[in-house]
Image (cartoon, rainbow, N blue to C red):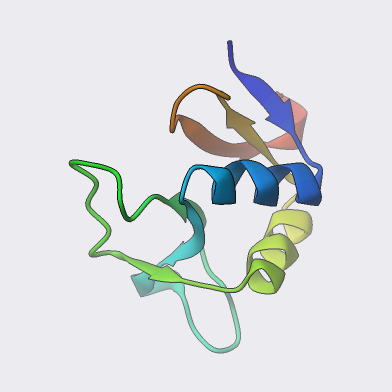
Length: 88
């Protein structure tokens, strides 16, 4: 069953417990703007991260709040999706 959260501590704890890291899509990322944010799981089999760049949690949550996003995730898997809060 998927859960939705906007709690920064809960998101960071879930991501790090799964070996994940905050990331941005490379073509959208710059020193001035985090760009499109994602969660990447570098150790997951069959995961491709060539188009992602690791960013700081500060950058990640800055963009997360700027666009009023939420994280949809499942506790027992690596499933996650960043969604708009009003769609959750």
